[in-house]
Picture 1: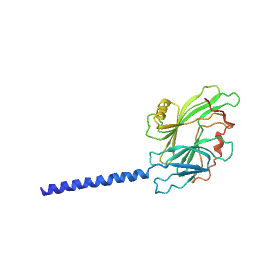
Picture 2: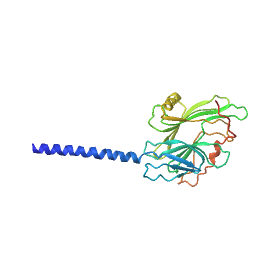
Picture 3: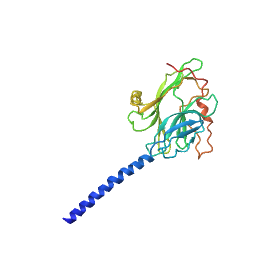
Picture 4: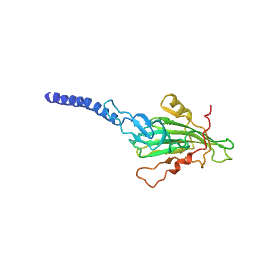
Length: 248
């Protein structure tokens, strides 16, 4: 009887310890994986808020970009570093078209995309491309992941109609995982439902004339810290002649 009592006492003591330790441990993990919060933008610098009133804020991130407008932060479900999604230019006081940038939180990796909206032929005003961009938990069928999602239609041939496709960019452990879907595409209605539920947000499109150089929907990567040979002059590929008034 004494042996049974001793075993039961040890059993209860074991679960008592777990009840104290495990919740504390999970709280620490949650604090370590908490996403940073953007405080303000000053020039090319993005400043972050401190996690608590007693803590020091993270060091500012020098994006080396200009006219920055942050949209949000895309979390990586694979344990990788999150990405800041924003609009910006690569030059100061210039006429270069704004683009959408996905910049890793440490500034080491960056990719940029064509800004959503309509692109028109400068002579005929014919529609060459139109797109709608979304970010957050927007992907139909997998609303657990943060993505940058673009529904787009593009004129690939003057003799053909606009061809639809969907571009998806998802933060992975080491880089952004990107794919272009032109068959069995997601339905934008499901994404708009996520916007209504405040799980996803849309980037307001901008209308402009055709690009000065041939348009490419392939995302452009800026130079990483470990690659000194790559040239980022291709960032001007998305430049337009001028913007048009936003459509109503």
